[in-house]
Length: 397
Image (cartoon, rainbow, N blue to C red; front, top):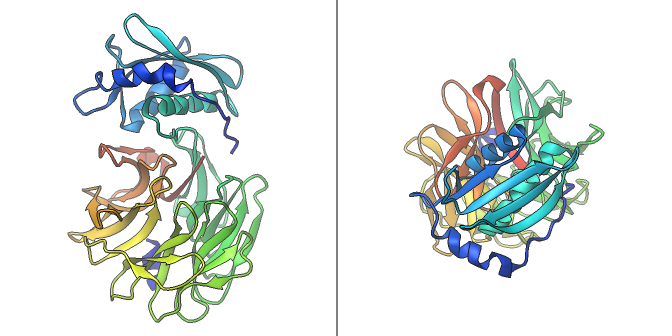
């Protein structure tokens, strides 16, 4: 866990059908759901690989159930329309009425299918789709940890680094072309580097004396927040997008770590052990007094991540009954709730819809990345144990 360590796009823009065309469909979806409130879909395609991919995506979501029944709320048809395009149609009702028709393009056929599934999510649930996004994470194979990238379905995984050293905390830039991470590969101490995804070039951006960790881009990509201990103890700093012109935000005798930006980029939430054990604090991104968040759920709260859609929600890691679990703080209610149970769960990362989280699940046999639907509580593994250990995920679309 990062806090413990301190102590030792080419999105293809598509417009939806006019709202009026979906008025009856939205009313219908409220009627045709299964017992858990999931929206029933039928997936059709003349290409078996396309239907398999779409079924896998929607089954992962948590807001849908894929069925072959005639009473489904929507019938989804996805047909190949070229090497990197598909024709998407969405219909509903008895008799069947077409509600949406779009040609969807992507970087290749699989990407086009996933983007069409994202469009279906937008049209039926009025939330952002996330299937065509990418992950960066720490993967460990044959005892060696490196930064990897993958699609959300873990069908295309490739290493991004060859440091052959301890690496941690990859975080995407909003444009998906760069990421920042902490590595020990050159100095033997934790330094922050920026990686160009296309060229593989690594540029040091924080190699100060002491610990350099927790780097994360602001929502507009113009700034980076990080935790630096060059002044003695770990403090929160903000730099420009190249790691220059550092400004120190916190000044105290406690340890600060794991900064995360608010959706508008005006505030940061971070972890501090000022009360004796880690708790969550909020501060303006330009500096000023810090305020402790009344999570009121655990005497150990760390690794906060601000919801990208709802500024009132912050996910974090909490110690509960001697183990780590993912929790959610609601600023409106000024209270928190535990979202996971069972094996240790930590390192939450929001997806773009503000509904789903990717997190790290640890047990005695493996460390895996899991997907959590915060509305239904559904938890799904993103990869098989045969891949090796995976942790510290970051998501970009």
